[in-house]
Image (cartoon, rainbow, N blue to C red):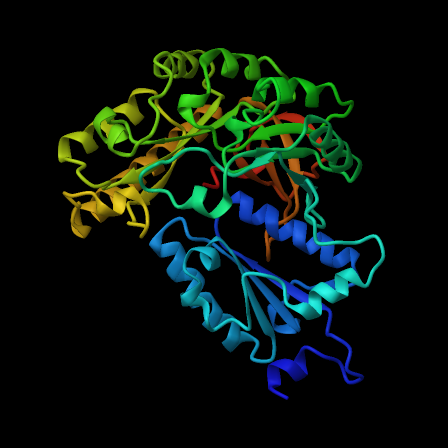
Length: 428
């Protein structure tokens, strides 16, 4: 018997049920990992935090960029060196997209028979994912309201990996929210592949606003945070309505990707609502506390220096609060992989660096604008190795509480002053 197999069983031949998890990529992957952790725990497995102490390590991979895929491939070797006796299970988008690169894993793409039998042996348990999860010891939960995407963006592999959009029924969403609140979640993040598509596949095509109204009718105090929104699927009226709801966080993250109409067209993305840009500028002037973020791709095929400048100017014109910057990464099998006029690596990386420098300016400016203002804060667990607790405002600012300040559990309102926080910053 190999060392891996002997390590994954105890001395009487039973399956070693200690399981550790390593997650790469987006909030959907984080949700998937926590859902699997919850089901395996309920079925009798023992999740552990220390990767070195696990009989099994489950690696949830990402394929959104070449860098993410390379990191996932390299992670298998790192985990093998860290814990030679563990059996490694590789799951997620990376394994579905390019399974040939994950031959170093013991199991690929699905749970091994040993763990599946562990779950199935417990009456009443299966591997179906729960709709809402909250990591142990955390105060923020995730509620996946939909999965999949109907768009065909030229650069994206996600629709081919996660399939078309499928919406969770409103009653299931509400039941999951109730469960998360009962388990102590002070904030619930509504997540999915493309949450603005929620309802499009259901009878009557209800909207995301309809779902939010339905969720807000559930008694409780947990605030709701929206994950990424597609700009062409939301309207100023929807955003204005959200800002009128005390339980919806004043934080909107958009997948604008570029500020150039020509680049947007080459990306095969829908144009944002024509009133969205002016509305965001008006919103920024009247509500400086509202957090506005965006994904941005640098160096998409054919992007000229002038088009890149358009993106910089557009970001500054609002201005946004932070950016998620991605140098363009060709994904085999996508339409963009065959486009001419590739931007060479050097200018592509230089543009990404300029966007990251702009991101630092935006985050600093947004943080300074909010110092001294009263904000709603949720208490988070201390960071690893830190002595003091942390907090998260509704508008997405992180803070490290001053050692002399004892934060209240749950949510509370307080001014962002030095007596409260030793440090206020944006995590992104």
